[in-house]
Image (spheres, rainbow, N blue to C red):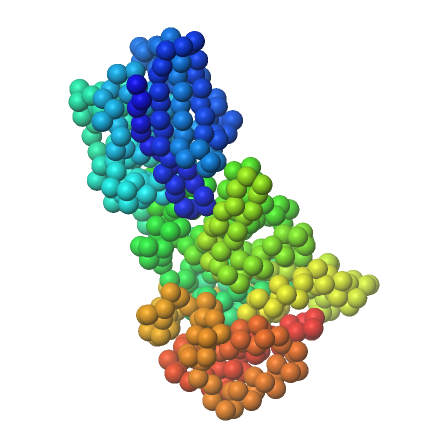
Length: 506
């Protein structure tokens, strides 16, 4: 007798439907799983055997074959335990095979028959909705599955509850939704905490409006990390589609908690000893890396030159395309990586270049050596490059706090609304995403602004990429002034974010 149910396999955030076929035939007692499964799937035989025994069922003394189809797709993870057990019960005649065919199931089995949480519930539930199929998942993850809009979700505590539900002896209650966490109530950071640094605050506001990448250079203690940590507080809130998109990635990584969607823009700040696979994704199961977990949010790299050269160069493609391809011998997947890149670094190894009385004996040669760790192509992809000077204690004692995040956010939203009117029929939402063709349509430079751009570009030896990035920044500044044209004053401010840090001049 053959019984069949379904589960899923993941290729990045894409979901592939997998058929779980079980056949029980005469022959020597055995339990074989075929279909290109990993070690965790091979071990599921013992978990399934123990879970069935825990609810009073024994495997038949026959030849049992489990096929995971299509057989040429690599399957990984423990979430196949539950569909294997249910399909096996269908082949044994415990449940009707017709009652389990139109379900996608995910769950790891404990030896006592409990169904344990697994990663990837949200994208799998979305896929089940698309296939017009029911979805079975662990009880704790029922609220997460509900966000897909699927009306046929079953979330049992254990295998016996699910068996009784499928046989009609028990009706499991539907899972209850859990609202997203209130972003405003959980916000503890505010721009008003930062005293001084008005130029850096202005640069952050411009970056928030246009989605631009930003590099801050300055001595230790000048406030670079504080500024970066407060950028999410002046970014527009996630839309419903963006929340779902970000939450899918976090679900695959196993980071969604308590069935709640990611309601705030991610802020990822990996340590500089992070490996390249940890940053871009990969490993044995090609999991999403830090840049994908920062999708639609902020990726902050502090002490930028301390990261390995290989890791930094791996960021070049995602910064340009908004996605990252992870190629391994057994898999080739693509993850979205449309993040806002924020970096901070000291001007030299000692950190006090240009600060009287603090420079080391090797200045300024140590600065050139330290800054050379950042390649030109990577710097070329950073729109805004600013200096963050050190504020002395006397000034800190005299300065009052500046504008709060809510005030700045109101201006950002107003500028984003002006900016968004141009992109209504385009698959982009910010100036930073505009390619050359779109940029020609939206960037109306006055003659003075164009001449100023060409003059400074020649002085700074800007590449074609850098040339266009300056236009994008100027377009954002014009949006903040609600101006359809890019004026010379807008271009001057955009260019100032390159001139101050060009050629190591701090």
